[in-house]
Length: 153
Length: 408
Image (cartoon, rainbow over all chains, first blue to last red; front, side, top):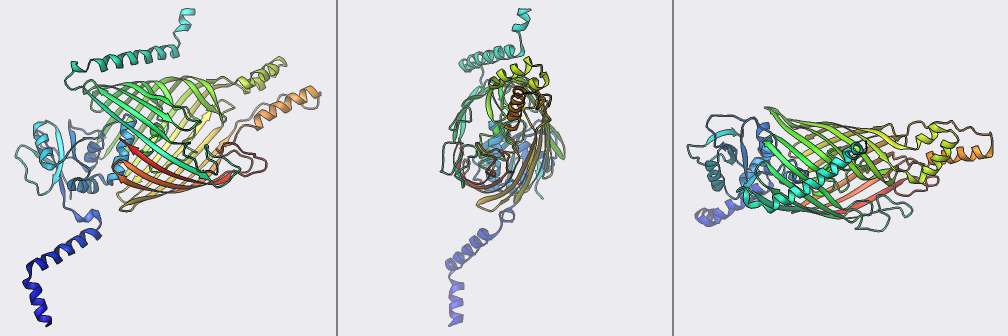
């Protein structure tokens, strides 16, 4: 009986898929944000190869100075890659980032980067604007004209 | 000579403010001249309610009945960019509390010659301490009320002048250097009372540096202030007539004040530790030397932030002259007693506090907060409480606050 039941579960692909999906969701739900996602890389429309330190990337995306003529392009707050970037590069939660920008904006110090809805539109924007920098998922395929300037370890 | 007197720094500042308004209007009326001109409209608001647990005390307007009218506010900001380098910003704020002024807080012309250098000319807020220039933007910090020991209303907040900001980067260290110079004419709180003040000059230098998860900041500010003290001018005249000049002059609110700040923070995605230490020094006997500081810790849970803050201040008045002799005749005794009364009535704002609070970001622009502060001062001190019978009651209370903060 037991064997029959196991066999029927094995044979029933949709049931297996459901269990798999459920397990994956359960893992996602309980795993800390910092380990649940893949790596990100920073891409730029620049002529020469440059390599930024994590501090420089933080500074660039938080309205601070960088040694190169670069302008940051971010993804919208609910984007998955933005969450990875917040966690692994900026080291700040989304709510902390929002309160930081409230401080910068209303004291007239700096403004948040331009925000775009998808990686594709961010890539397109970077391709059309010299010095523009954005972040994408590590697996995203890139046009040859863009250079990787930073990658999470 | 008259012509020279007319061109005081305040007069020049006033002319500059008017000039700026005209320039702002002129730029706003000619948007079509630049292709990259734009107008942005934004703002922030907060509804704060609070109460203290003691019915005989009052603290920043709160008594033991829940009040919504002490710290609630709404501000609207217009940001007109004429080009990438030139913009005009105006911010108007309406405040519900009686002790706070409503009106134009910011009105300045901003010029950014390079991405790392910017200048602002016009009405601005003085960035004395970490949150001084955004003290009304509750969304920008996690407390409902930042520690009053540091963020006291001892200091004036607005000025008309020029600010420069330079952002720097040296691979592993990034930060900014700021300098400003200006003037101020308006109301100022001195020894607990709001008075008309004239700040002949105020300048400041401030810098910050970020290295890994550490943020270090330091600042020095200096101002020269004179305040009209009408209630005491008759008494001062009597002292002068009897040749007690030191005593008479000690009641003048006229002199220089210096402000020092050191800040150190450590921040990770899970938690932060922030601290700030400040000192106010002045040669005005009516303004006490005030040392203050806080240590704050916060922990981010997935949905909420919990924070706890210890804060303290120590206020000390300088020594007043004692040149009026006692026991010579009843008139002089009465005069000496009157002088002592004035000195003894100066409020001593030494306060220890412990605050715990919670912040929940409901959406990316709305935050809900709750906060509980235990406030404890010494018997006989005012300790930032509003009205207190210091002989019979210790300034000690629990302050409850709830807030909704938003930006748009």
